Amino acid sequence: MCDDETIQALAKAEIFHGLTPEEITIFYHAAQRVTCEKTATVIAKGQVGAALYIILNGQFEVDLPLGVYVPQLVGGAAERRMTKIQLNALRAGDCFGEYSLLAPQPHSASVVATEAGELLMIPQPAFEAILQAHDRIAKTVYANMLHTLIGRLRKLNIEWSLYLQNTVV
Image (cartoon, rainbow, N blue to C red; front, side, top):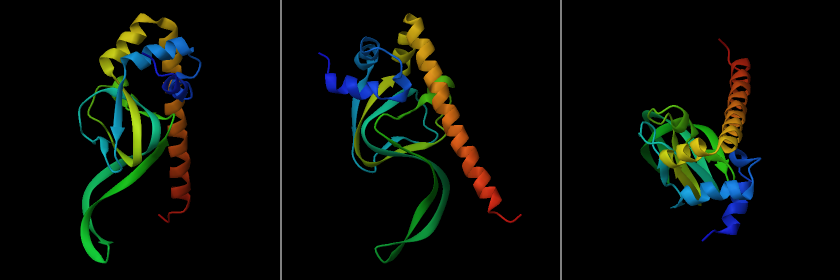
């Protein structure tokens, strides 16, 4: 059974841009639906595992935990909380986990739900099997992944440039 609403949501995902509904359905059948409550950690920095996650709804934050605890005021009381750097904010149509598909290493950042949401998770073996069996899909998806990664890198370059311009050395 195929969920037409989910297929339409996947069609809006940048990683599937240029694929037909039938091609997107192949990924849908290989995926597992994941429901996340607010503050749920989907991926933890350092965790090993490879899967592609496509956000159907909700918002997620890509964080780099620094491993340093600093006192912060919470409800009038000082609590020690781990510091972090927010690398990206993601919403419906965005994907994450692509680094682990391209280079099998522990995750370089954490992904946390900033509001309740729903994802489709495609495990690496299923993802690779689809790409191995369908050359056109592979070419399209890899090109879209490259565009996504280049866009993120350009955004980061702009942010660093602005930071360095405003920093006295």
